[in-house]
Every structure is written in C-alpha cells, then in structure tokens.
Length: 130
View 1 (cartoon, rainbow, N blue to C red):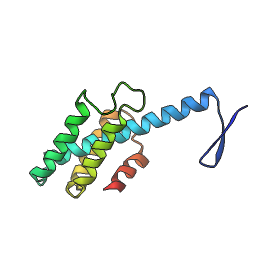
View 2 (view 1 turned 180 degrees about the vertical axis):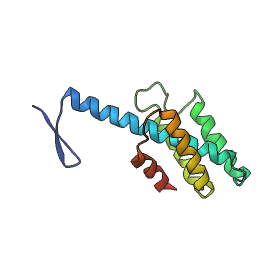
View 3 (view 1 turned 135 degrees about the vertical axis):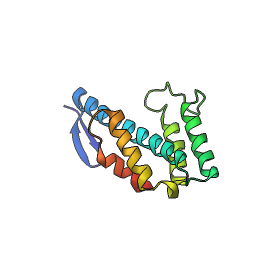
View 4 (view 1 turned 60 degrees about the vertical axis):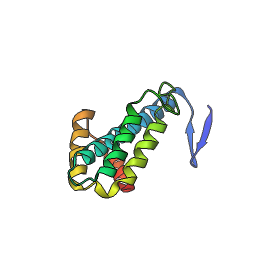
C-alpha cells in the first residue's frame, strides 16, 4: 500500500482514489467554468453594464471560444486553465455590475445546463470573488 501526504492528510494512492479525485476536480472545474461564463453573459445583457465592461466581457468570451490560446485546449487538464483565468479576471474586473438579478439568472441557467443538483459550495466560491 502506497501512501501519499496531501494537505496534511494521508490517503491510499490507488486507482479508485485517483479516479474519484479527478472526477471531483473535473466536476468542480466544469461547474465553476460554466457559472463564470453565465455570469459574464448575463452581465453583458444587463442594460446597466457600461460599454467598457461589455468590451472586457466580449474579449474574455472571445478568448474562451478561440482556438488560439497560450495553452492549447487539447492539453489534458491544463488546456482550459488559461481560459478560466482570463474569464475570472474579466469577472472580477466587472464585479460591480454583477447584481442579484445577474447571479439569479446565471444560477438558474446553470441548474438547467448541468442537469443535476448544482454544487452550491462551488457557486459560493465564485460569488465570493465578487
């Protein structure tokens, strides 16, 4: 039995543990990423969002869908980290234009898109950045 020390916790390092961790990480990343995109989209549609903020949102979303990245999206696990970073930067930059209405619409749409119960801890983490 191989043991791994991770954040002060000793866990068994076997296929099941690794698989469980990866699935948990991917779900968190996907929920977080989708929620950020939805927040940006609903902030873009909000009539109170000024044009300079809409330009930042447009740039971040264009970078997200663009096939040209600093880290190629085909790189497993790392490929979307630069996209997530750009979107997070945009989100924090325009945070004052993300009101309760924008958050509510984004959360409701996230529930529909994910097709399962949304991890509220992940949503609260993103909301905490704002």
